[in-house]
Length: 448
Image (cartoon, rainbow, N blue to C red):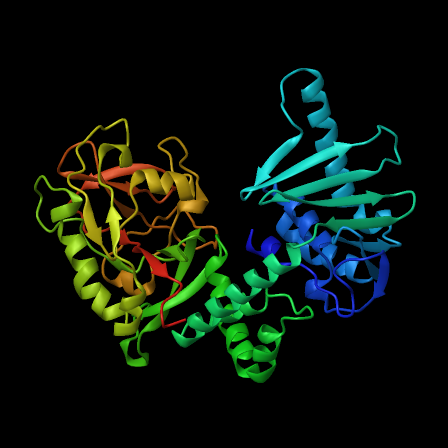
């Protein structure tokens, strides 16, 4: 959790040791307290809900006055007063439940210390009492140093206590992050660089990140614009436009933008899997009626040749990733057990049966699956794409059927999704099937 590691406070005018001293100060919301980071760390362990909680929790805590107490041992404690249970209810309820569960597990002998690990950091819990108005506590251990957190609903007081020397470690980390951000910016990665800069706390003693952003407002504006452009691509189940292809069957007005359904977002690798919303053309799986696999069929050659050159500019083609396409039996229908041939390296491909099942719920039994039905464009219809007089898409359009890359019952068959949305098969030379291209896009491409 990089955000956790970047939040640490340094206070102007506060001594590093000596007798206890209270230092009043005001800092920007991003760096208000390690308290926020601790709460986020604990909530992140649930793997759900933390992302949505972050803004509201941060905003809530930022409303409260705080002070820092420098302790005689060189450590320090930050105090937040007046933190209401209304603002803190989600965190305290989660911590209560987690602590109680751990306590029960320990009593039953099924758990060792009351702790879990979040991103390599050990988070420990202690439910001090079972009363309704309990005091909740948590601690995070980093490199042998323990930073403690407490919240008391009775006094409405929250505290974060951290040991001597921790500040220097966070300052070093902030400097490293700043240098990393500058390298990203110098390499043309504005979005990534700005994203790092805005997470570096603007505390006393390290203002380089804030000063850099203040001096380069155009970077923030460009990053915001790029983020707005990328956001729809990260929304699985939504639609985006990419490339262009003849669709309305009126060549006089040029090609129309292609709409794509976002099937998958790979955050770690910043890539998305797209499937055309409509059937863009009508083509046979293979021009000749022979035993064939995806590797050697004419539809694969057309997609990665004529179609790609027609639908995408050079820069757009550069954003399309080459995919290692699995054509093993595991990708086909288990009922047919037909050899799918060798794996391939493709920029553009068709979904397999396994992928159509994973992303669209395609099965053999369900013949009323609107999620997997497709309507051909006017151009595809003109090229011979079949449309049903009975089945419709979720948009109310007449549905066609579309090819999958997996084999059918025989090597001269190919799998397809019928107009009702279930899997079936057709002879490979049937020319009434819609083509729904699929591709992986690199979100770090220069086109974004």
